[in-house]
Image (tube, rainbow, N blue to C red; front, side):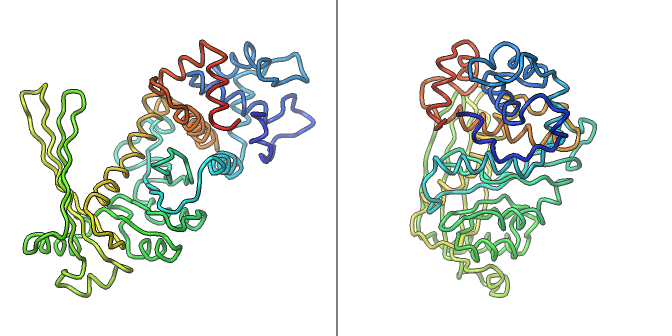
Amino acid sequence: MLITIFDGVKDPRKIDQCTYEPGDLMAIALLTYLCGGEDYPDMAMFAEHRSGEFGLLPYTDRNPSRDTFERLFAALGTDYVRQCVVEHGKRIMDVMNEKQIAIDGKKECGTAPGQKGPKGDYLLHAWVTENSLLLGQEKVRDKENEIPAIPRMLDRLVIDGAVVSIDAMGTQVDIAEKIVGKNAHYFLAVKENRAGLLSEIQDVIKYNQPTSTYSVTEKEHARVETRAVSIYPADMMEDKEIFGRWKNLRTLVCVETERVHVSEGGRTEVQTRYYISDEDFPLAQYYGELARGHWGIENGLHRHLDVTFKEDKCRARKKNAAQNLSLLRKLALQIATHTQDKLSVRKRLRCASWNPKYLITLLKNYGF
């Protein structure tokens, strides 16, 4: 049943000194997160009061303590846990062709609350936006180290036919080449860190007409947002040396966003973002959806980790604990989002804590 997805996890503890199987403890931790729990004491309480419902710990009358969970997750190798989470997600997803994979980093504020700005531990994520599934996770030290971590992550991923979107820090020539070399497409943000490329894009937009445009207006809460997308052939760039650096570069994209905050007296924000793509799809709407989709990793993953699962408040920092617990939170999030009903993710977790049948429904809908 549930613990079968953890069968491949190598137990790092001294077997003759352990009472509890690692698969049981990991299943309890996952179920704790699915019921809105947040930390090791919550896992210990779930083990005491509800583990029997799922056939866990049948070989002992004892209950694991918070220290038992802490020791296990600190010692577990992150590669084993990541493989369990990622491989099970792939089983419920069809082929990667035409999927969008958003790559972005998130600071682990709880592991080093005193470190501000770009310093500290980060987890780099590869997230399938359409399916809300984790494809990869890489730990890096300090924000700037995301650049060398992205190629390492790409080396482990099977991305044939997918579109890989990355924020401006990942807009690197070698990264674009690696994506194309793996039979995928890139959609990369361009900001001031690529001043020459940015200037060329702005000149093309200034002196030429777009080949396609698209505009959409959305109303949410007390905000009205309008996004206008325009695309241009990349070979319109005058500086052919800059143009030639980027493997198979075909399309330049401009997204202008206007946000009107109705509740603040009509305060208006205007933002212009630029992107490059190796695809030559002729409709601006397609690229607008990619730009919008990239933020799925922020809204669909990072925000839920902090707001719903309180990840930034987690102080687990011994050895591999922070990474392993983050992986289980992501698996819990994938399970909770896979059920389609009228409840928010937070309400689904709360309902699962009150109603054992609803918790079983969440698990069955995900394929357990």
